[in-house]
Image (cartoon, rainbow, N blue to C red; front, side, top):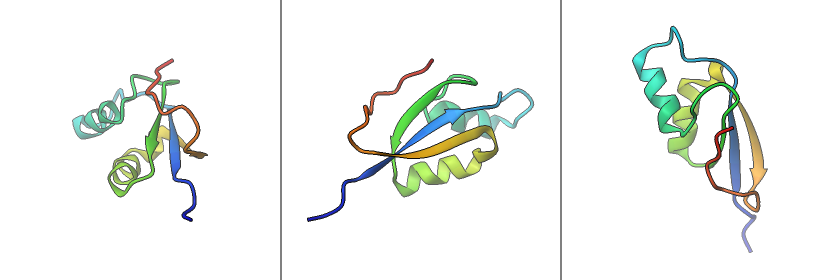
Length: 74
């Protein structure tokens, strides 16, 4: 039996003002809408690559797959 899949809780902690357009597009592509917003995404290489591009603007926490996976923006 395989281990349960992990997800990543991604929270935007800094504004994209003054960042390059590529970084702004990456933040929007992750589903984040501004500082304080958060989303839960799958722990896949594509999401990890996007997160790595803008990690200085984010806080990332690994959570169990049982956590709600809907994209919420606060």
